[in-house]
Length: 172
Image (tube, one colour):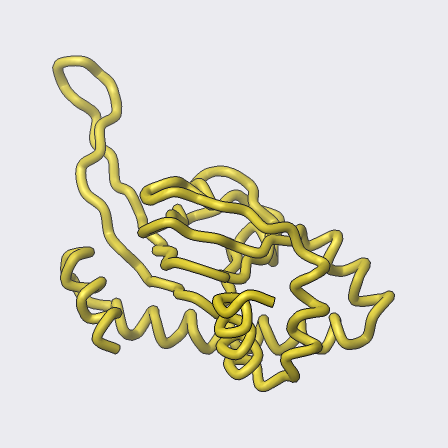
């Protein structure tokens, strides 16, 4: 394994408090995807039932607010609110898609070049029945995600700009 993978595995497994070999087995079941800076991973208004694990890069959750241009009648971006960030070794989902099979309420996008491991909930559920260790890791990930989401929500519950939040995130 390359050094970046070993460093990532160490972070991912220690975040979840699981063995590196179990983490590696879990990740082998997933597909790798690459996103460039600013590219949308989860689009607001679209169904997304994937679980993602960040191998490299930073992902942000952002709400976009639109207004109608009175001259053209077209919708234009009015403002955006950065809700949270996730980084290497962390996992994320679109909660409404993953839990309720509803369209995403928040856009998730790459802050920089991002490499993700990705698996659809249906495929993950099938693997859970086949491999008990996958089910265990799945539970750890969801528990960890809930805690990270709660921390991020509290951490970013103010009216700071995205830049201010990112600087706070980096220092955190």
